[in-house]
Amino acid sequence: MLTRFAPAPTGFLHLGHVVNALYVWGYAREAGGRVLLRIEDHDRQRSRPEYERAILEDLAWLGFQADGPPVRQSDREPVYRGALARLAGQGLMYGCACTRAELQQAPPGLDGERPYPGTCRSRGLPLADGIGWRVRMTPGEERFDDRLLGPQVQDPSAQCGDLLVRDRLGNWTYQFAVVADDWAQQITDVIRGVDLLASTGRQIRLARLLGRATPPRFAHHPLVMRTATEKLSKSDGDTGVRDLRAAGWAAAEVLAHARALVS
Ligand code: GLU
Image (cartoon, rainbow, N blue to C red):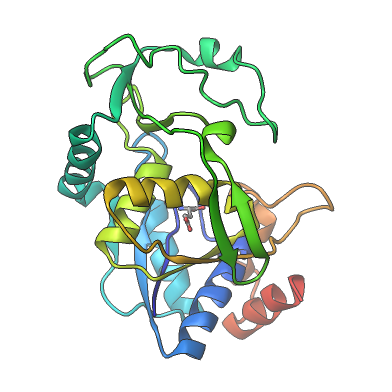
């Protein structure tokens, strides 16, 4: 069993991450598996090296040790180019010049997301800089058995439509980079918060389109909520591991607190 902890360096480590780390390392230990650390800095505008340093330092302070050096998405351009070539080779990629404002006018889909309406699908735009790059998602269900939530059925074409692979600023998207990495790193188990549940069908689809016959197994765990309806955000200073450290908490106390929040 090989899993990963995959924070985005767009903020400091907070209790939501600690809960996720407890699940990730917990599953791995139980299965005699390993954990890789992946810094998901695909969003170059929002990622900061100082957040990465702080995340690594706080994880070490909490005692979460990865089985290998951290991997950084910004160092993995060839992996994404290779994955892109696989999609393009099947004629699945196209350029998309839709603006954000245009996309926001698309009618909402089943669960509040706005599936891409396919405006540029047959315009024949090349994969050029300055525009988005999308992959075609044909209608069809993806099924998976979540280890915590049981059987799930999702139709990515109805949820999100043709998925953005690279944005107009030249960033590989989260959805694409995470699937390319999970496959390239041979990740067998993805363990993450339930806020990413809706992403799983499209990630399984993308993995299949890339040629991965057996997608990873998934487990989506509860989130730490700020209130009954508001999940924690990285900017919430009051839940930051740094702040708790500064306030004199011991690592064991932070871990116990995070455990209590989801039990
Ligand atoms: N990088 C994502 C985040 O910070 C997690 C990715 C994943 O576990 O799939 O929320």
